[in-house]
Length: 340
Image (tube, rainbow, N blue to C red):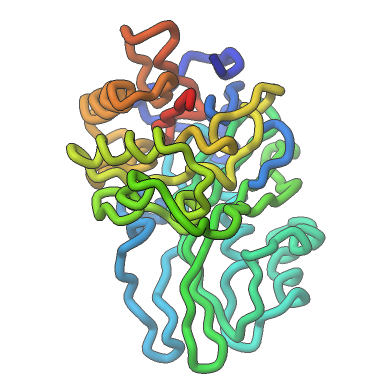
């Protein structure tokens, strides 16, 4: 059973981890259905006040036709707010620009202004489409893994671009790899999600999950389901949970590390056998104000829906052998993994 490396400190549970932006380094690993190898992967307000990942309306700017967006910023409840902030700032800098500032050269200038390597722009892929203007809203930033000196931050975003008079919406997930540099974090690499093309036919449960209003899917996660590369056990569990909860998914298959971060053990995510949830019934998992009982109940219901490997900010008792786990990586989301 995939497990994360041992923590260097006890899991933070539902306590707010009050650290400075430099943060206290906690050794932990990636999502147990989770890539040490390259992946294919609260805003000035708390994360719980961000727009929903999909099926949400974002006010449009009358001048450009693009929506008004809000910079995403971590809260003090994060384990390593500085790592998340650095990853998100890079994605926001590359993926949003005013009219007349599109293209690679302008993106490099924006990245240089952050004090980061301009070569990162060459790995931006779908984050930097050809367009006259772009707006970007980060939906969530969650850990793909965090160790003492390295981290994976999965930045889930929606993007709107204007070409001429037409506005097109899209977005994906980027696995941002970071390392500690002195008192801060620097970005080493970007790995945008690669969901693959849509399948010609889908299983009934997958189609139902795609159409369920109580299952909120960001762009890459929805594309994963449409690709036909996600096991029906995942879709069935989502549907079962949606009968009780409104679940906002962050990551399914693509955009997640290939292996459990810091190990050579394959993650369940790239094999289409896991999903992560960052918000339950409107309550962000990372928010210390979220009722602990809600998260505990959701984790137990995920296990009852068929997950053999449920991780989150709360270490639960019972279940099968090591069915439940908790570590700093899963302080900000609930992971549900499946054998088939």
